[in-house]
Image (cartoon, rainbow, N blue to C red; front, side):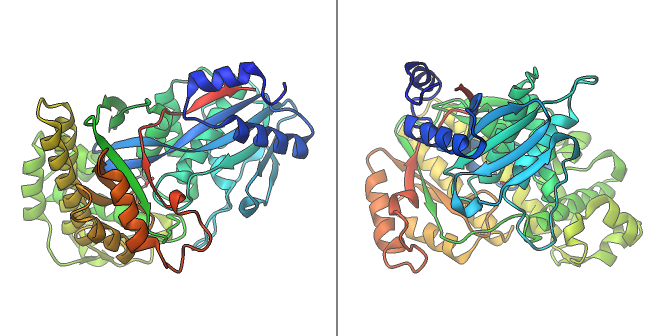
Length: 470
Ligand code: GLA
């Protein structure tokens, strides 16, 4: 198939007018050919995402409201009947190739180190193979990756890679899987990296609909489109600090703190610990409202940090039992857990998601809706900074600069670095972006020769994952 064939151009237009350009696909095809001396069978495109509200609540079972962005991962795919699994990347920063087979996928992660880039691809393929129909033999895949989602910046470059690989493997094997099944499988498979994430990123990457944000509920996974106010414009601004979740224990420590808070609150109310593992499950079990859960958290959890010994004594378990049930391997050495503040953030943030989604569907003026959405985003950031302690001084600086120029601004994604998302309008977005370029990026030592338009940009809700025929 020649690069600019009308068929390919038509498919691209149908699938995604704002999707990958023909130039990018052609460059990927050329690269694929130069490495494998063959033509790809098909391409997969999976977008990154920006979370509008609902941070650090998905792994507690509460709903979130993200949207997909235009930046994406593209993979060119060719089936290999001999079961080979070869992975290469166009970007010279990720040049180490992977060369193996589908029957023996091992994902190696060294403590305290960022995983090899292809480990995320392996997670996706492994996830699909684990759910493979009995009696069928999987085909292998030759995969060439080209992504333009900023890495380790809170806009889901890793999950997009996992989802793209899973979609490639599922399509190559002609598996009949729903997007919900694929999203759930990807969320599970990404945990091979060692980070015990929730399911937000995988769900939005796979299920997004162009033009809408999504309200995503978990256990079971359910999504609903959210129509954002007509003149809203969300701007993403990179703080020029990065965090690889798998490299540090920060993220898993928050996951553990939420699990432990759930257990201490359950114990306080006489709920058998083994019946609930997430805050949302405890709420369901008790049949109470989010406001009542907040009261319970305030009553049951001490303000001072807990040591492991203290938690063991409250829960009447040994340290070995506690470690086995609630503490991820890479943070077994952590001995201080702040249960009250973490639970308060999660429960208040869950309430903010409900209010945010309701405001988007309410029959009120766009002006009022935007003002209130912006306030919720501002409250979310304060909570992430103070109660959840997952911000970064540079994120806080972006948020402070945004006061008065944007309706609301908050860190997005896991935090500890990465990006902020700001709510502006069609008439204020350009001036806001210009202000940040002047006051934050101009002269910033980490900008280097990067194009400022790739560091701060307006985005609109993009479509979810798609398969593009070659
Ligand atoms: C990461 C995880 C998500 C979610 C966010 C924080 O992106 O992958 O599951 O927990 O952090 O909201």
